[in-house]
Length: 64
Length: 170
Image (cartoon, rainbow over all chains, first blue to last red; front, top):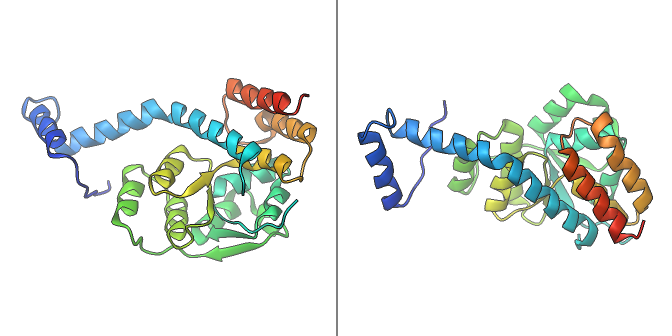
């Protein structure tokens, strides 16, 4: 496991704390890990498509 | 073709993928190919012959990131040691292009404001740089599913192929 120190907007943090206190997550670490995992799961394919399309533009019309 | 004046910092993926389709020579068009030492270890493990190519390789060690956000993002997105080392090298070579085929590494690079591209970009760039003809590039693209470990959805590969055909009236 990795330890990450970061800053998040206070309103976002308060919502996270509320979800933990309501029992939806074991603790804040559990919530943030789940949030990142879900983000990566749902965006990997979309991101790859975006990156490939960026590469097409750069490859065909870039200037370096 | 104009003189190459761009340096690249490479993750293992593009080196391995380009070598698998016999296109490593496309990197000859860059002034310097900077390989993080941990990326060299990874290439030696999976595609050792790639490192014997006569290319302007330069092996560098990463360093502690100057920007704390970089290390935090590398950890959050679970980047491996090679990707992390490459991104720390990009900090000291901000004019270079970072080459990676990893979506998470690419996302972190973009967030840091680095120029970042992948294997497909290098292949298509070879037309613009006069290294390959559009027809040769179409042939290379067709080899990817059978000869390379680079995974691209077939629909996306078809989209790339159609774009090349349309662009060059083939």
